[in-house]
Length: 172
Image (tube, rainbow, N blue to C red; front, top):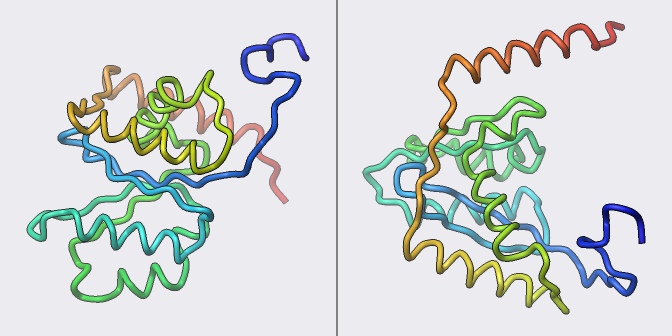
């Protein structure tokens, strides 16, 4: 036991595997489409994009906010998006260390607090079931996330961060 870790780890903690959670948040309604997968490859990303495409009315554009993970830019994903039928798809990549700009990160935080933290799962399947169940309950009464800070506060924070990064960057 390490000070400050007693709520997160027990002396007999055993990891049963890992799980990748893919989630798409409808910013207008708060509803979440999700899938759990064993991996996070380009093929997995593409399968999730196809799932979103299937569950989004054809007359709506699809805007996806992503981090810069290579799987999000893989050849299968690029080829699928290049098809004229996918002209409604628009990918927006967050800058490094700016995941906070993606609204689904707020949902991940709520999920972690309400369904995962302080729970014990004896298998990856139990974890996946807990995520599925909690998400189903969330979608019965989804809550859209709204930023409460004024835009100028956010922009000022971004500018301060850019300045700090520029000062600490090594130029080779």
